[in-house]
Length: 60
View 1: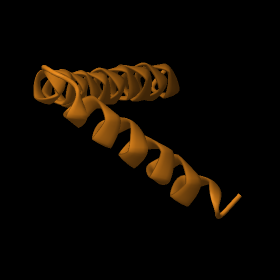
View 2: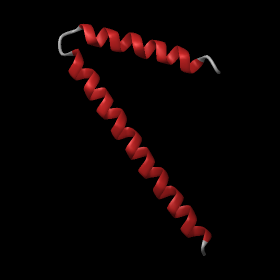
View 3: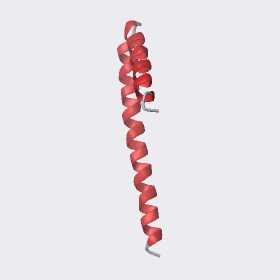
């Protein structure tokens, strides 16, 4: 289980190198970065809403 992040990061690095070598690869990498940022923001908002709902239920 502790090796999994290292294996995944190695595979991700190889994929990014492959994308960089093709035409328009920089745009693909930039799009993936923006997609990851938006995903993190969306999941943070979902977590915030769930926490708020749980807090409001505890007040009843």
